[in-house]
Length: 68
Image (cartoon, rainbow, N blue to C red; front, top):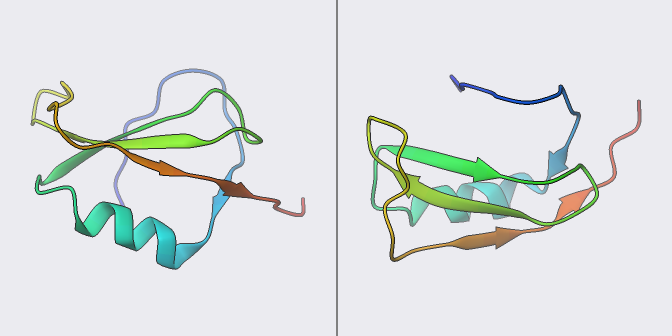
Protein backbone atom coordinates (compact mmCIF):
# COMPACT_ATOMS: atom_id res chain seq x y z
CA UNK A 1 0.00 0.00 0.00
CA UNK A 2 1.47 3.35 -0.98
CA UNK A 3 1.32 6.09 1.64
CA UNK A 4 2.41 9.64 2.31
CA UNK A 5 3.37 10.17 5.94
CA UNK A 6 3.93 13.35 7.95
CA UNK A 7 5.20 13.58 11.51
CA UNK A 8 7.42 11.39 13.65
CA UNK A 9 7.82 7.70 12.67
CA UNK A 10 5.52 5.36 14.61
CA UNK A 11 4.79 1.64 14.70
CA UNK A 12 1.07 0.91 14.91
CA UNK A 13 -0.94 -2.24 14.24
CA UNK A 14 -4.59 -2.86 13.44
CA UNK A 15 -6.73 -5.96 13.11
CA UNK A 16 -6.46 -6.52 9.33
CA UNK A 17 -10.15 -7.36 8.86
CA UNK A 18 -11.28 -4.19 10.68
CA UNK A 19 -8.87 -2.14 8.56
CA UNK A 20 -10.19 -3.72 5.35
CA UNK A 21 -13.81 -3.13 6.46
CA UNK A 22 -13.16 0.56 7.09
CA UNK A 23 -11.32 1.10 3.81
CA UNK A 24 -13.91 -0.86 1.80
CA UNK A 25 -16.69 1.51 2.87
CA UNK A 26 -14.91 4.81 2.18
CA UNK A 27 -16.46 5.37 -1.22
CA UNK A 28 -13.26 7.12 -2.35
CA UNK A 29 -10.00 6.10 -3.98
CA UNK A 30 -7.86 7.78 -1.29
CA UNK A 31 -7.97 7.61 2.50
CA UNK A 32 -6.70 9.79 5.35
CA UNK A 33 -5.59 7.84 8.41
CA UNK A 34 -5.27 10.16 11.42
CA UNK A 35 -3.91 9.23 14.84
CA UNK A 36 -2.12 10.80 17.80
CA UNK A 37 0.01 7.86 18.91
CA UNK A 38 0.17 4.06 18.63
CA UNK A 39 -2.01 3.49 21.70
CA UNK A 40 -5.03 5.68 20.90
CA UNK A 41 -7.81 5.13 18.35
CA UNK A 42 -7.27 6.20 14.74
CA UNK A 43 -9.80 7.69 12.32
CA UNK A 44 -10.05 6.71 8.66
CA UNK A 45 -11.71 9.28 6.39
CA UNK A 46 -12.18 9.45 2.62
CA UNK A 47 -9.91 11.93 0.86
CA UNK A 48 -9.59 13.52 -2.56
CA UNK A 49 -6.52 13.33 -4.78
CA UNK A 50 -5.31 16.56 -3.16
CA UNK A 51 -5.35 14.91 0.29
CA UNK A 52 -8.28 16.96 1.58
CA UNK A 53 -10.77 14.98 3.70
CA UNK A 54 -14.19 14.46 2.16
CA UNK A 55 -16.83 14.99 4.88
CA UNK A 56 -19.60 12.51 5.59
CA UNK A 57 -17.86 9.28 6.64
CA UNK A 58 -15.48 8.50 9.49
CA UNK A 59 -14.37 5.10 10.68
CA UNK A 60 -12.88 4.74 14.17
CA UNK A 61 -10.40 1.90 14.56
CA UNK A 62 -8.59 0.75 17.68
CA UNK A 63 -4.92 -0.23 17.46
CA UNK A 64 -3.58 -3.56 18.68
CA UNK A 65 -0.32 -4.12 20.51
CA UNK A 66 2.64 -4.84 18.27
CA UNK A 67 5.74 -6.59 19.58
CA UNK A 68 8.99 -4.89 18.64
